[in-house]
Amino acid sequence: MSQDTSPATPRVPRDFYADLMRASQASRAGFLAERERWLRGVPVEGREELLFEFEMLLRAVERYLNLNTVVDARDQPLVTRDFREELADVRDAMDRAIRVARHLQDPDSDQKMVFRKYVETQLADDRVRRALIEEQLDQETPPESLFVLREAFDALKNLLDHLLKLPAANLGLFQDVGKLSLREIVLNRYFRPFRPLEFRVEYDRLRSVRLLDTLSTLQEEQRAAFTTAFLGLFRLLHYLAYVDAEEQPPFSRRVRVLLALVRSEANALASWMHAELSPKAGSKSLQAATLRAARDIARETERVAREVLVNLDRDADAPLRAASAFTSVLRTQVVVLVEALAPNGGLADGVFDELMSPQEGALRLRKDLWVYAQLCRAAESHLRAEDVPAAERALDSLKGFLGYFHDGSYQLLRYGDYDAFDRFTSLLVELPWPPEGPGIRARLGEDLRRFIQTLESTFHAVSRRTLLQGRGFDRQDAEALRDRFLSAPAR
Image (cartoon, rainbow, N blue to C red):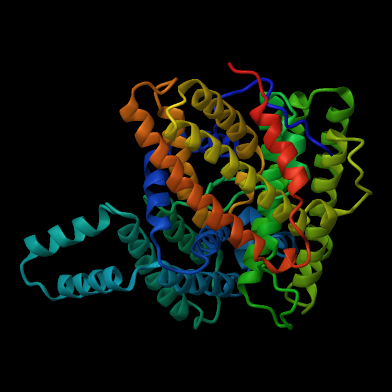
């Protein structure tokens, strides 16, 4: 679907998706903002993906220890059932969570916390020891919070190792392990796992150009509702990516825990789409499409649980068959909803790969980065020449472009790029308007010059991506986009 990129109705630039995500976390906004700042400073490759995996495992453990998620509970009375298999699954998920947490910990601060823990065990003075314990449990920083949870999981894993040596694990034991695990997870200050339909700016992004363009044409309430649905669908697909299709049976035990999480949240998403999305969808045809999508997700989730997940103990290929079935229905519903929103978008049924084309995203990002730099360069040039009216027109064009950029290409940036772009956007939005005084204009000119360097380096990094090799830069198309913003009427 093509998008009208004309900025005829300029608006204050903002990240609609970040606003939507933060609205779902209002009660914990301060903690999450501090955690986001911490994550940006973690010197580990793929840090946001590690954080996603860690929180996914926390959520999966919490759901798996809920009896409602034990899919074959009807096979025998719960009071006579042996839960050792389920506890072994949980033990494996906890072991992986511990290893991921270690990757996220800064080695120096981690060693200090380990040493402090050792000192605590050696102190004879109970007052000092108590003070150290309270200091640790206060979780004043994300690293301390992560360390506390890692230590708790280490203890629970050790406990499970001994419990699994028992001849049987009854219902009461299973539930007690669940209570202890749940307490450690939900009381954690910075790493309490996301709830269904609660999203994180660190790793929940829509990266389809066509989908982003389609959503940007919707009214605010309708857009928020459909964006939530798509974020929920892609969150589930993200979970399923951890069921490795290349892995040979027997699969890791934690895969069973992840599939239980997928089942639980797929049902939650289907219920939300039926009760919340459909009434806000808009036209009757859109309402019908959302109801069908909700019904298909719920029906297929129940089928997979009934026919595949119950055989996890007996069929070595069951995990992969379940993941494949879940993936198929979720991808289909993504395409169905996009086609319902944009009937003439040119997508055939089931063409998920076309919708998610990384090459199309890279091409769009490269073009928009070039236009962004050109608009910044025009504003900086007029400011340096002290041509105030021309500078104000150029800055007005730039602010109009930011709304378009945040709706699309900003979502295609890599997480490590966000900080520089966010700082410049904040500067431009908070600037007194129009910028008055030679001092303010000179500082703005310098900020523009530095950000142009950031845009150019990002542009070149995108251009070097393997998937763009042999794809020349369409300068004529980029200039046409630039000129539409430069020729926009002044506000």
